[in-house]
Image 1: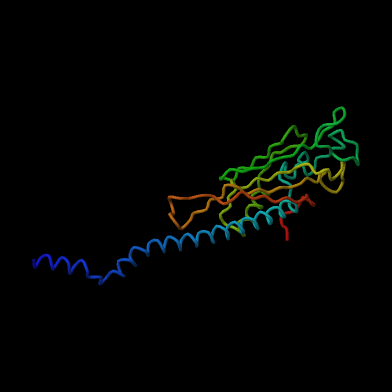
Image 2 (image 1 turned 45 degrees about the vertical axis):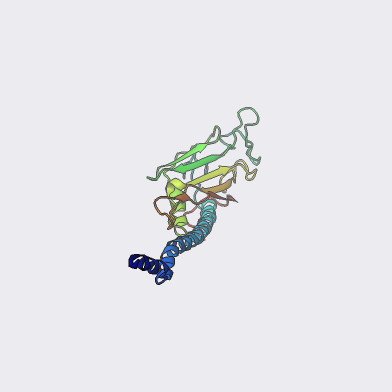
Length: 219
């Protein structure tokens, strides 16, 4: 009987109940707080990458054209009037037109993590696309000043036909392409469940029309 009374007393004792409830709720509150912080970090990092893409595109249109670098047969110096069969003063077409006339189908430049840059024509190009990658690396370096998580392998630069420029232009490239800088596959490591639940930031692109296409610095 005495044992039964002791058990009843123990069962009706509510001292310490608040501490137990608090101990159960605290982990959930901490996880919820970390989740809110991660959402804020994700939005902040996305905005940083977006600004980095805009700055990178600005550099791409106002600094050296990447395909062919400064070579005489690179995109920057190639003459469609002399070598491409397009009469001087005419717009360089996107697709071949006329007998023997060359065109500008567009170029895509990408890089490996080690920094090896490759530029590939989207069809047949009459100019050289061989590059040292210096201009590409300079653009990525400028973007890293805005968001440090962008590597060479995360960046793609496209030069696409715009209908601007003309064959035989003595003051610059015969084409003024649309330049699109794309940043993709940038990792995002959350605090919440770090190491278990990782995902990337969204792919972002920005496009401007080529300006002078030469130089190593842009404001």
